[in-house]
Length: 247
Image (cartoon, rainbow, N blue to C red; front, side, top):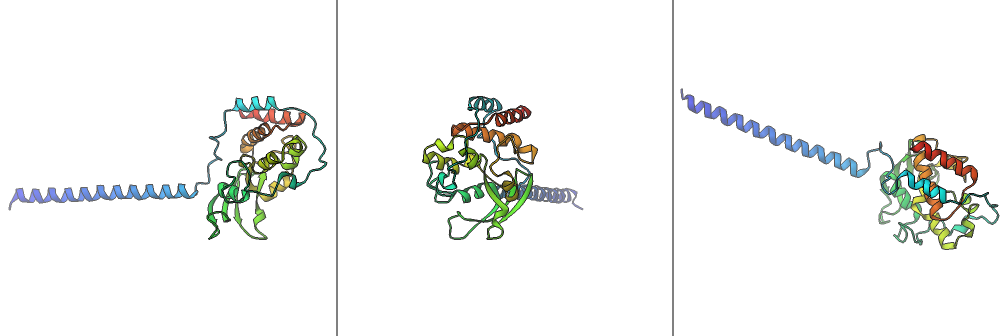
């Protein structure tokens, strides 16, 4: 028996098997990585929080709040939705304006995951998707339709009527249109919760989900500061207390 030849064949077999196993492992890792990347790209991760990279540190909000005028709300006299321009107009000088899609669809496309668009609309009209509702901490299915669309609504974080009573009636019309379509003031939320909120300010309403209240008051303060709106004393105290709890 040729011992040397047998050893060589045994070594060759081991080498081939080793190369096969290593190649298989590399392929498996590559496939799994691709699956993870595909899921991330499609928005299947539903455990995260809303992106906050654009929002500065907590002291900035305290500083902005300190600059807001504190006074009683003005009468609602003269308020009408039309005072803020055409509903969901794309003809506004804010982010996402003039992109060919109306504001409501822009916000749905931004805030929903697993979004399906209506064919032939250049990925503009949202037909369905899944909402991670930060107001309630739950998920809500969105399906466009006369009896289903209201399950998900686009909320003005600072409500239009509240803004009207706190300085918006004195703004130029183009600024009111910008306010009504500013994506920083808009969020897709559960329809029933949006109806419950109505035109309430932070003194009388905060999101049921306590984990989102810090983000909510930060956005309220940002928008009121941006558009030179004022706050009532009770509202100022509520915003101050919530900011203190966020530290």
